[in-house]
Amino acid sequence: MPFMRADCTHHRALTRAAWLAAVALSVGSANAAAQTAQAPAVGDDTGAAALDENRWSIDASAYTYIVPEAANYVQPTVNANRDWLHLEARYNYEAVDAASAWVGFNIGTDAKVSWTVVPMFGAIFGDVEGVAPGYHASVSWRKLGLYSEGEYVFDADDSTGNFFYNWSELTFAPVESFWFGLVAQRTRAYQTEREIQRGLLAGFGYRRLEFVGHVFNPDDSAPTVVLAVRVSF
Image (cartoon, rainbow, N blue to C red; front, side, top):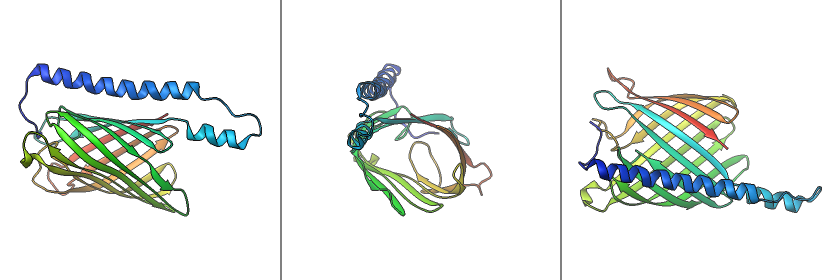
């Protein structure tokens, strides 16, 4: 069964409403900022650079977990970035019927070896309540990519609920629109006999859309399957 604490229906409804409000606020702020940005004058490179720095980029993803002997669920995430600022909202990540809101800042460089690090801090509410420092990090070189995200949750109700969550990928992209590789995760969103789940992934992209399939513990008689779709704006 998925890892969660008992609660009441009213509490879950409030949690979902709060999460949806946070996502709507982030998306609304991003759209407003994009609409009010002024275009640079023709031939004005300084203006073009300023416009790029003040433009919001938004992406939304939904990961569908098909878990053996447990209830399937969807884990949505929304990210919004503007220059150094990173905002993020998650649901069903730390636990089913838990939501989290994050703020962080972007650090990185686009060179022969490109890298990005996003230190973050988040608040968690719902079936898990607490705070968490976290991060996103990625490195790419030629056709190889390494990505990792993690957070350490400090449970406000019970310190035994403190836990380090992690998702990591190592990928190879023979062409820009297709990639495959290895994936690992450590989670308490659902129960598993393995501390760290390992698996395979394959994905492809088309314009602003990406589709990725993951198979965790493929040597098990009933592996966990995670299907993901992502759209960027």
